[in-house]
Amino acid sequence: MDIQGLGVDIANIRKMKRILSRKTGGRFVENTFTEAEKNCAGGESSHLATAFAAKEAVYKAFGTGWIEGKDVELVRCRTGAPEVKLYGEIKQIAKKRKIRNIMISVSYTGDYAVAVAVLTS
Image (cartoon, one colour):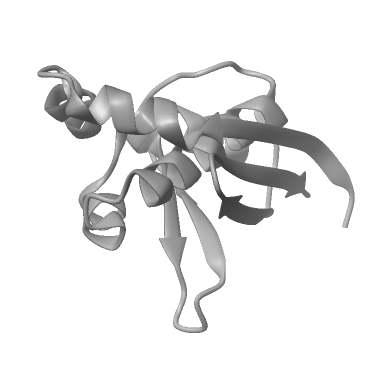
């Protein structure tokens, strides 16, 4: 198992709350989060900020910059541990680079959510 990329991101939960309260907040959510992420978050800004940080951390690990919000999905397995699913262009990039696993760790407290992603081959 070789490490192919590392990404970290921190998101401001208060800022996410402000974004969600704007009239364009609904469009932001629709364009950025999958149905599973929205259902898991239940409208909680802390959960959406955590998912957003996870997406950013994954894109940073790939070194591509942001491609498409819904193409990186943060899901919870039965144990509650977070997992990442890829779709679209970033999935093709992962396949081309022979990325076999994406390890992700997420957390939040107070005003901040953080995520760390590690790509392995």
